[in-house]
Image 1 (cartoon, rainbow, N blue to C red):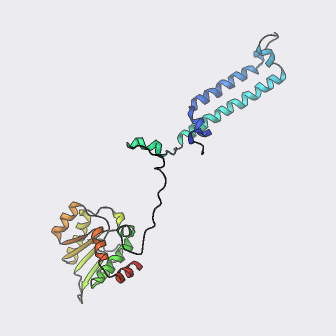
Image 2: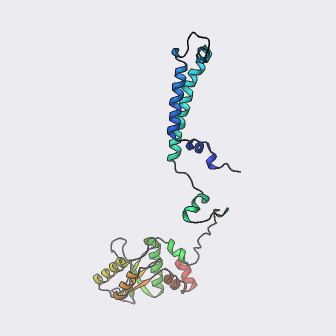
Image 3: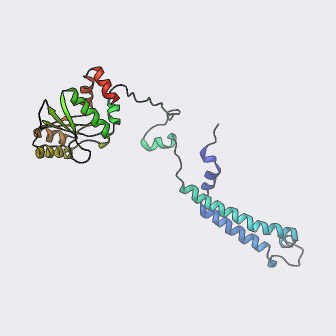
Length: 252
């Protein structure tokens, strides 16, 4: 059986406060320094002092005067260090703090299945970084027969993609992509896309995220002619494509 954490030497030292070890160090030093001093023994034959006055007794007392206070002093330092070190709390200790009842064996590690990258899924979409998500969005709109122009990274603000219909020379739709690590997409991001649409005189916009949109963002988009595509909606659109097209998009 594994040795319990509270039975380790460090934990046993920490049970005694550092100041108690310090007091023991001082007391043992004073006691043995008195025993080895000339005033502690006399010419009488009775008592402890005459015995200590023998050379071997004084030598032992002198060693004890040095060693014991040093050990107690080290114990005081160790007690401080152990108390300052964060201690690992197991599931049995943590469960009551959360109003839970601990069941033995419930803290065993659960194997995590590897993410399947051979087919589209919501977890897969949510692991995509911004650049990869932008590429998937571009491929999706290309599958809808749009001509897609990628905006320069970091240079054009809220616009990630421009969609052209047929041989048009001006974009008909502006697209913004927000990766999962962005969190919930709010009204601010929708407003930024609307500003880009107004600047480029484009009447339609699309905002895509594997995550979700706030209620305020949905209300704002409904009045601004902006289509919102959240994670489940985008996944449904991707899975509706031909399997060959999906495979090509997954390969990147």
